[in-house]
Length: 260
Ligand code: NAD
Image 1 (cartoon, rainbow, N blue to C red):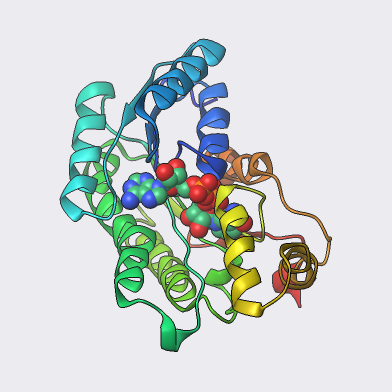
Image 2 (cartoon, rainbow, N blue to C red; image 1 turned 120 degrees about the horizontal axis):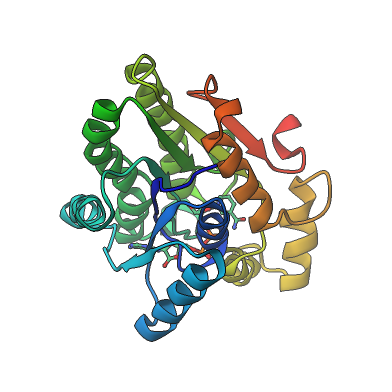
């Protein structure tokens, strides 16, 4: 159903972004993979995706903490594949610490990658989407875009910001055939969460096992991690014709967490 559509998925060398890239490629989209990691490993991953789904896949190593790099990512993608029709702003980092000890440079990095990059990429894809009268922008926010948790000041602030930006983008583009929505995962088992379990164990002074049971899954009423494929399925739905009237929404995929 997405045959020939050009899609950028930021932060797609790992975790949720990689699952989203796989699902959109499966539906026939041309995929721009972005993210950090070992170049050779990523090239192998792109070839595998491309072979599996018989669709072009290219890698772009843009560092999304830099505004200029985000703009170059959109430019290079359009030059290689044509105008970008689907933008999935997924790249994100986490840092866990009480506010008094929160390193200001971590605050700046989280705001830059998790929030400002969404603005820069959105700004750059809109003119082509508007000209073509079709576009889908999907922002991978978080349950932490809707509620707070201790020790995650920068992340919670950035994700709340993403949901605000999603609403404004949706309103400005409402008549242009462009939708913009946020997907709000609860806990998904990915490298990001794996690192966090270690950091939370230190912050709370408990074992990693206890972090999983008492901190992470305690929040999630269905008592299991969501899968990256479940998040990818929601993104694919938002790209489908059935979702054409859904815009400015924040869709929770969190096992009931934010229903509390
Ligand atoms: P992950 O660490 O597995 O993947 C993050 C991706 O972002 C990687 O590809 C990484 O290379 C990329 N990235 C990091 N810094 C970058 C930079 N400066 N420039 C370009 N790319 C960069 O994490 P994940 O769990 O798959 O998270 C993906 C998104 O989902 C994030 O926005 C995260 O906040 C959100 N999220 C995750 C969970 C969860 O439980 N895992 C829950 C809610 C929201």
